[in-house]
Length: 626
Ligand code: FAD
Image (cartoon, rainbow, N blue to C red):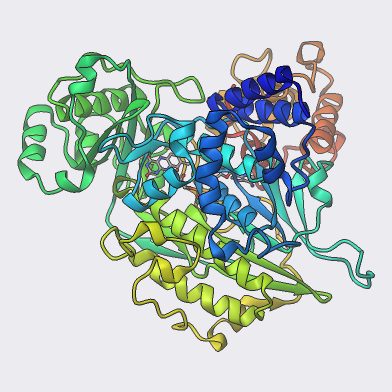
């Protein structure tokens, strides 16, 4: 038995955990709590029950009541449905975490790896009624009292992640930050049954997750899916440039009075857009405003008005060039967003101060939605030396949402449930082709789902697709149509770390496409990063690098502890180059294409090879906040 004092302390720690407002804080308070109660979340089968008996404050009990109602769904078989199944989830975004929770409730051992260590996205997600119901059923209000109060139907991405992380931790999901998935590793040949099975190559390489064998891997790493084997379909629409903007919400009465603009209703209000254009020169196709932790706006802007207002400098046909950082006037973009927000709220928001993003900049970004991607298939099975691995995609990796419509989280959660259902089928012993055929049948429904055509009785929702999709025919895809997804053979060798599938969408001030960094942009980037370094002047991608100082400066800029820049001698180019190449290889994993000495031997370096080499630094460092 515990003393009253211990109970008190546990109660306090639990309260800290519930209230934690950052990713790190959540993990820390959770660890403290487990330590105090002497509970090990690695005992995932008993963890939740032990925790429940030890934490008996009314707050805790209220949460257990909620969660118990969920855990008693018959599909979970009292947490026995997937016992012994080990699942890796790549990415701690909303969909990765939502999937993790379901798999844990099924009794699987679940590990989530997240390459970042902060939840920093202010942007706000529209929630469908069923997602609100789903989250409330997981105790959302206990973690975040304001959750969808009244008619509110949205939540900031970071708040959603935070709440899902807490639920996942309580369900004994293992969660690791600063761990990046690199690729799958096959089992080795001729191993006894206890040899290594399917594993993940991760960064840092010596992290304990690297030595876990997995039965299931779920790609939830956002639109930039890193898992092999998923072909992407492109939907190319007309040019669509979306702008998101977040302003500080001081929660004053004046702010509280301002009405939200819910997207769907407004798309049809032509007069609004005509007036906006006439008064400000801003020409929009739609605009959404949600009052959340921030005042959040997302709008689709017409290109001509962005040109007219000086936001975009030159008109290019290629959207990547059009929206490249060199072609966007950041100040004008801020002005454009603010003016649209001001007009859209009838000048009622007293101050429009930009909220600050994770990089310390005003939280405004412009994104290109002209091309949207969806994976051709939702899952596949790999088999090597008699060992099988079920691989699946969820969330943005599976199907990219168009933000102004706000379908990301709604369809994302449906796919999370469908994937959990698939893992259950798999654990029950269905054959790979049966599992895949059913999964692909369900995936055909996903892009068509709307608030109108999914089942209305949210109370009945479970991971069983029959509870969510009316008139479901889960056999529309036949086994012979999914044979190609049952892959029995070697993993394809990645030709080069720069080449990855598909396009990535990032804010315009970052590059969007990894495989195609144009040298001009690479040069601009290098110039920016090496600016101000003594004796460094980058004017090209060849001779400017011969003294070695530029390369040392580039490394120093991002990893100042690796190179003592001030002690370098400009004359000693061979040494400088050798140093930079060695450090890059050892510490950053960037292989040199030649030795430092050869490079310094006077000959002008080969441009193509230099571009390839420098691109690797760009890949690694781009977007790194300094
Ligand atoms: P994400 O939320 O993108 O999460 C993916 C996670 O995986 C990230 O945390 C990432 O750090 C991690 N990750 C990536 N690669 C790896 C790796 N190799 N190893 C480990 N972890 C990895 N939707 C809207 O409706 N409105 C918006 O305004 C809006 N703004 C957005 C702004 C940004 C910058 C981004 C990226 C997305 C935005 N979205 C928006 C989309 C929305 O966030 C997603 O639809 C929703 O969060 C569900 O996505 P997800 O969980 O599938 O992926």
